[in-house]
Amino acid sequence: GESGDEEWDKIDCDPAGMPEEQIQQPPVWQAAVRVPVETAVEAVEAAQKPNMPRRGVEILVGAGAFVQDRIADYSRAVADMAAPDYWEKDSGHMECVACSVTLTDAVPDNVDGPDGQRRKHHCRACGRLVCFQCSSGRRKVPSRGWQEEVRVCDLCVPKPDPL
Image (cartoon, rainbow, N blue to C red; front, side):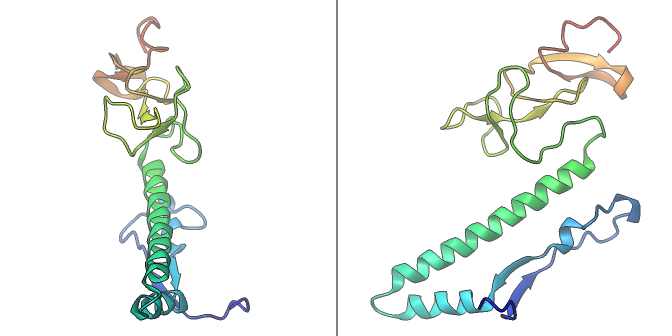
């Protein structure tokens, strides 16, 4: 109900062993994925009624989408914490800095997605988000700790050495 006192099933995400200094406030993994018990019960009961299987499926699909979205949020937050400090964050709207195409993790590398989106990458020199077509160059970037040739965006490729 609206009183906020409904029962909840809770899936906790715990980053066992993560150093205290790496924990963001509020910790993403403590923002548990929650599904109201009454929603799960309603879905099962609706699916068992002869004329209501569709409603049960709709409720279950909705709950599944909710959980999937929370897992995706958690994954992006963990990726942002693990990335080098100079990299642009994966959170929010992602767009290629060079060509403005929409970026995603949901399509394979080196192909365009069904809506024209492309897989995201980070330029190892400037740290900005770019698509595969705008980051085909490879250069050493010793100023960032990359002694071997690594992915560099088309905007950084022509810059003079050293990067």
